[in-house]
Image 1 (spheres, rainbow, N blue to C red):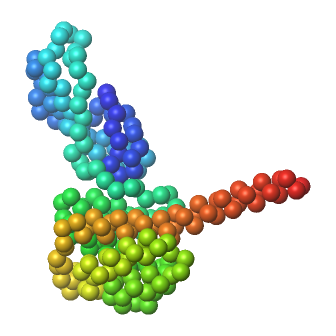
Image 2 (tube, rainbow, N blue to C red; image 1 turned 60 degrees about the horizontal axis):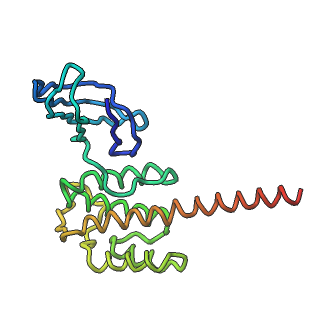
Image 3 (cartoon, helix red, strand yellow; image 1 turned 30 degrees about the vertical axis):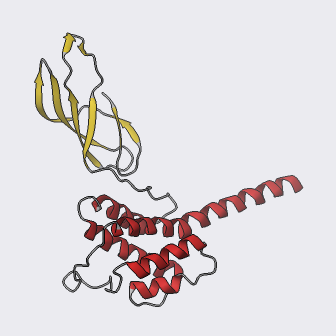
Length: 217
C-alpha cells in the first residue's frame, strides 16, 4: 500500500488497506475507496485508489497506484504551530477547511477568530470588529506589515456586524472575491505574532541564558 498526508495535521502515514467499497476491479485495473484514521490527530480520511493500467501478469500492475484524498479536502494554509492554543487553532483550521465550499462561512469564522485573538491578547475595548482592529493596530510593538494588513482588512472588509450575535441575529454578510482568503491569512499572521513569535523568542532567551550560565560556572 502507499502513503498519504493527513489534510489536517500534515503527518504522512502508510495506508493499511481498510477498503470501504470495491468500485471496479477487472483486467484493465481497479478503483477502490479506502477509509483510514490519521495516527496523530485521529482524523477520518477517505481515499480514492486507482490503477487503470493493464495487468502484465499475475504479479500485478506495472504502474504506481494513484491516491486521491476525497475527505476531508486539503488544508491549503499553513497549519497552526504547536504554540497556538487549541481554542484559536481549531477555529482557524475550520475556517480553512470550509473555505473551498463556503467563503461566507469561512469569512465568518475568521472574523470571529480575529476578534477573539484581539480581545484575549491585545486588550481591546469591545465593539465592532472594525473598531477593535483599529485599536489593536496602534500597538507600537506590532510589525509594520501586520499593521498595514489590519488597516487593509478594516477598510475593505465587511466588519461592521458584531460577530458575537447569535445565529438567529447574525445577518449573512456579503464576501468580496478573495476576501475570505485574506481574512484567513490575517488570522494566521495574528497567531504568529501573538503566540508563535513570543514562544520562539522565549526559547532563544532560555537557551542563551543556559549557555551563559554554563560558561560562567
